[in-house]
Image 1 (cartoon, rainbow, N blue to C red):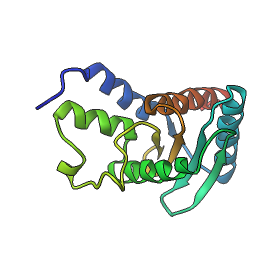
Image 2 (cartoon, rainbow, N blue to C red):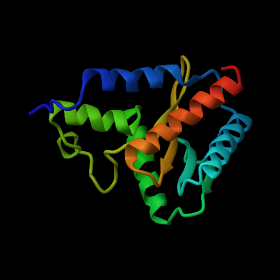
Image 3 (tube, one colour):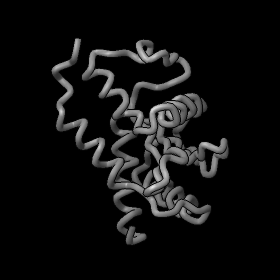
Length: 162
């Protein structure tokens, strides 16, 4: 049974974020700049989070564990990465779409110990090419993990004139 508490507007916002934050290219230099931007912002806010930028080739291209983050954050980041890889959308959007449709991950044959139905994973999409990886944050309440990624992408895209 569909959930009434998930608004169509919330899902549209998540879709628009994925459309807005597409890259023309995503080089090693871009990875470093974005990872550094996110790390500096997390340190500035004293957030106990782990940050990871992972490519679907299997490479963990950037990773940083802030003060207060825990080893368990790595487990959550792996699950969020697999969710983004499987669905090619943010992990929060997938979670909210499932909730809105009254579905579970198990309905889609997604093991709940392998994937994560929560925010904190965001697709790295190359314009006119597709999703090549994910930006992942773990350590805050899941919607705050997502919000931190969006906050950093807004600042990064503005600073890089993207």
